[in-house]
Amino acid sequence: MPTPNAPTEQSASRFRADLLKCGCGPNHTYGVCVSGGADSLALLLLANATAIKIKAVTVDHRLRAESATEAQQVAAICAQLGVVHETLILGAPGGGNLSAWARTARYAALREWAAREGVEMLMTAHHADDQLETVLMRLNRGAGVAGLAGVRARQADLCRPLLGWRKAELVAVVEAYGMAAVDDPTNYEDAYDRARLRKHLAKVEWLDPRMAAISAAALAEANDALDWSAQGLLDKHLSHDGKTLILTLPPIPRELARRAVAACLLKLNPGAKPRGDALDRLLDALPHGKVATLAGIKCVGGTSWRFTVAAPRRTK
Image (cartoon, rainbow, N blue to C red; front, side, top):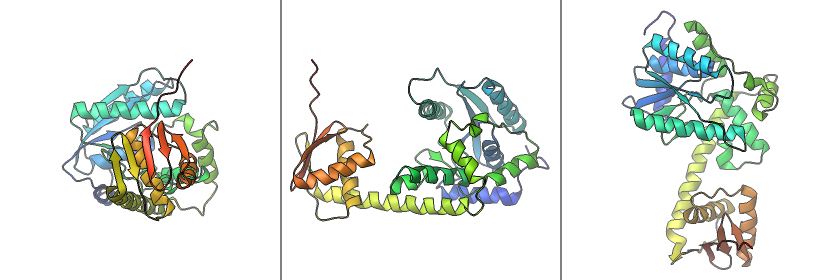
């Protein structure tokens, strides 16, 4: 619904260009994920001003008493804009890490909703400041090229067209419209690594999140190139003997060998998620003919490296 305070044509044009950079054209039906915060409300306003077909969705994790009211506020905003909206309510949290559970359950619910509603592409409001936080957190954990690429602008059915936008720009879009955004208190709780980092970054003026986003995008391209090279090696040097994969690699950079070995593990165990340090230890062992088990796969070194599903452990 056009209003005097809707996003400017300049902002809408910029958003359209960012969508195209994500490989997303005007013919998709987009599912805009809206929590009620300033970032996602700005995404909703920009998408609505861009003449693309959108539906909005809010995931209520039921982790805070205010979440139901916030979802209702988003529904009211969408009704004002003339955008179809639905709230998805998650079940009780599983055990273990609460944040990990919430993320996994959220995306599962979103993809189920998208399939039901004919939505081809989900759209989230990750922005340049988010990207800087992600890259720094992963850098602090010793991440490699893939991790330092941060969140991707496009991953299959998920796109993030705001990675080149600053948080302040998105707040300005919402304020110009006259909306009141939700301010989730967990964004400021020191119990969360990201919240603590965000507080420190607010005091550092010389770090430019846009430049960090550009670097992350370059690393994402480098990561794709490494994956492409590793796949070429597998096509030439990977064979199989019944249930055994046999990898005979020429002298190559260690990173390519790491990716080739990781691919072998995934072929035999699609759920494998070996840690980087565990892969490094395996890469040190295999050239010396040693035997190791990783991610449920028995790995035998030597001139050629052999991978088979490990026999289950005996229980007394």
